[in-house]
Length: 306
Image 1: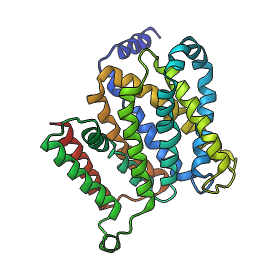
Image 2: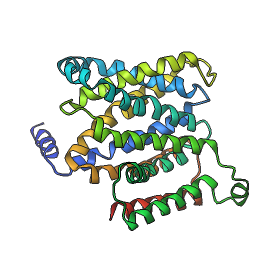
Image 3: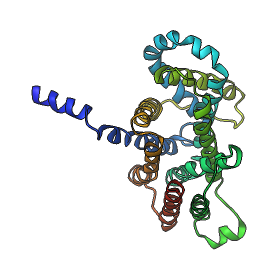
Image 4: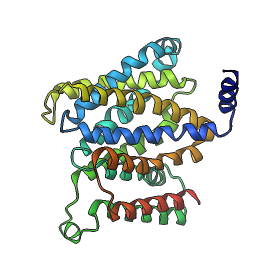
């Protein structure tokens, strides 16, 4: 027992620990896409799934966040509208858009297109926040755009001629733009002094409440949720792992490694997502997935290495 304790303590103090922990968020988030693909349409509609996911996550978080949220209530009150915008973009909008996309596209496509987020960040920062973009970064954007074009058109001549693109892929691109905006605004709007746990708690609380009127209005004419053993297991997974553990692990890793290094771990999502989609959903990996993913990765590498 003493030897195990010493090994555990050594691991906690290891420089490799943040790198190991940062593998978890893309793994859990890729799992979210795979589980979402499995249950959306078949058992539950997108807005409904998003609402119940975050409601369950909120109930699980409350015992741990109520006290720190109360202790930091003045910071929350002072910056409420900033937090509201961040919660709207991340908790309410992104996941709902992603689940809508998964009605029409594969989990493999969704995770690949998710890798385009850093490119959107670069473009938005350059166009609207006056951040200087080098020629190498511009080349990176163009190469990544080529990758997205390959995935969307599947290199099918008929699709290219008809300009007929899977609307699920388009929904996923909208979701990626939404997350890019959230990532950019996070730098400017996150309240200074607000600890990670209460910050996550108030975000989940606001995001869940925002989904209630959308659920009642029911703009997509969604059927009521079908409660069964599979649905309960799916909700439990996405409420705990992608919604709570992934966020906490991501925050820890980003703090230890910094944004430049830590942010690159999101590109493990296509690998994890494709492998899980093949194993659990029976999806196939095609040549256009490999070519498109390679272009997106190359474009990102060019963008980062100025």
